[in-house]
Length: 331
Image 1: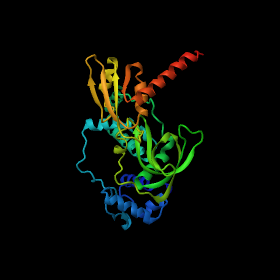
Image 2: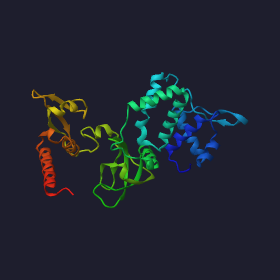
Image 3: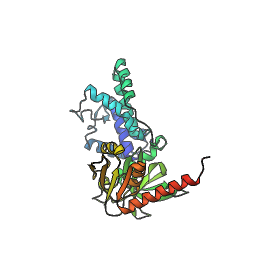
Image 4: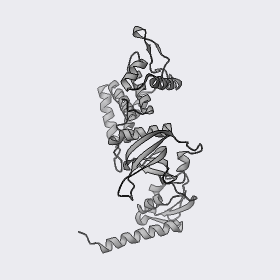
């Protein structure tokens, strides 16, 4: 386990301590993880300061054993309905399948299932059938477990990181250093928000297109006022616009007005029902790329009223699509 990054190693140490009756000694953990005693002592001290590990105490043969703090959450109790809800929520964590974090969650789910009587397990199966999570547009990260773990460490420790990335417009992957600021989960996929040294700007990278990650020992200074929520505040998804937010107004036909009104698409949205049954939706957005795709998905049932830039872009897209249908025969 010597290849584990600090955050992943500390998580695994905590799992190890929790799984053993007496815990473990510094020497035992150092041998198991293939690192120096002082590294383990530093990890254990951090876990102790966080209240997740107890002070070492004498165990068999007079050795000093570290153990997980089993009373770290003394008031945390769950009733039966909460336990069942946690078990049924496991599908939401599937994008992290294969990572050390998924392993811990999956272990908890197995324990929940093991403590239930067979009729209750059968009942869970029926509930699972009632709520089905589709995999439409979901990314499969089972082969990227280590990559995700490395990026989480890079974000946590603010480590300069080299990524190998194949953008949608490139034919060959490129490698360059970035400063990872955080991960965003959007529509079934994970995205890395990081400052690119090469481009001297903050960019968004889809994890599906990252093939390699290498962490440096050097650290970067993250702007104190940077928050992912603020960075994406005027985005309809994960694309950050460089310009100032502008008003976007879209009129939805009565056939889809109810569907649009049922959802919260953006924090700035204002939805106004019209006398003819249509719906006027207003947003404050800095990037128009994602809203363009969203409007196009409604076909003729959504019409942009402003800004003119977005209206023209959609008109061009629809005109080109019509020309394709007229020029290319069915094969």
